[in-house]
Image (cartoon, rainbow, N blue to C red; front, side, top):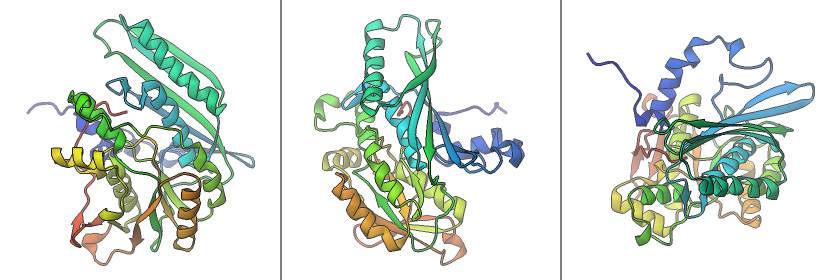
Length: 344
């Protein structure tokens, strides 16, 4: 028998990723070593961790970026690193207060390209006024690394942390902007098709304008995540699996740019499985879902209510995500889907 090995699908961010992490890490630690007392850690997989310090909720997030190509229409690995870190904090209901980074480059990497990447990072950091307080820089021998990898840490403060464990029947699912644009751009780049798809751009951006709305409705937002690896399919399946509830979405209500839809449909790829880097998926109490969506639109988001949460009608539907198709049929939305490597 051949030895089991890590595959690219393990980095997809879906069910395979969760199963590997459960085997490698989660199952090996007792609860008191998965979190700080009264906080949130890897006991509840989310976009970050919460440490309770007196009356302060300190939120910490860690991420790494390996995207290829490092420059793409709409951004770069530098734009992505800052935006992704800021967005993970905001998804936890936290105001970003500081960042740290670690940059690892391959011997022979272009100094000019490195300067462009760092300038993209610093430009956003200065725009958002988030201090970069510490970091690290390493060089790997030629061939030991493919270009550049950036790791980041974000630190934030949350009045009321949003932890993805409070999903409840009746909650509405809201998407803040058109999905799948980032995944489509990276895929087109990797396939050498950008010259034929000039209208497609990544949606990568920091969701800092979302923070005041999140703080306003914090008592009513039961879960929130940005659909990066695995797209909204991965997020919704994780929420359904962790709570045992059923999530129903309506495909014709999910916003997506027509050029992105046409490109992915031509390749037979479900947009629900493709990454977004400037979009949030929100599960909110039904009582405020309409006003929350209205406030999002007033703040410049193209938000739509795309589905709802319900108690499972039978054991088969427990922990499942169901999509209502454009013609009224119902299908299972699986977290296993197209595995695009080096997406973020």
